[in-house]
Length: 121
Image 1: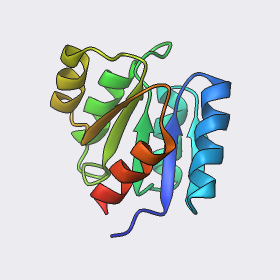
Image 2: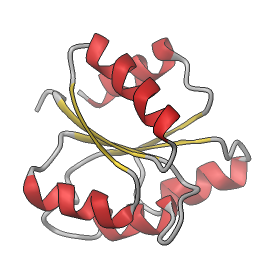
Image 3: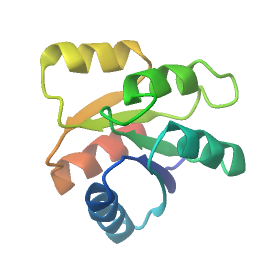
């Protein structure tokens, strides 16, 4: 199934604006959420084709939310790419163990993000 609709979860408005602009230029429809509660509400409204997930957020962090989503039978088929400033190998491994399909570090490189999305298509 081609990726068209992307949910971006990040508590930074600046990062949300940057990623939304970057993805819309690539032809994607983008919705945003600033925390786990908004992300889960957005999922219930409309299932995205891909989720870009920040890690460091107030309340439930991105690792916890990724685990919750990837273990829910309704959403287990939605790929998640961790998109975070946490650039340690242990963070990447932990993110993948929580159910993420890929991991990209901030600042996000447009070409690298597009390549990772294309790899999931």
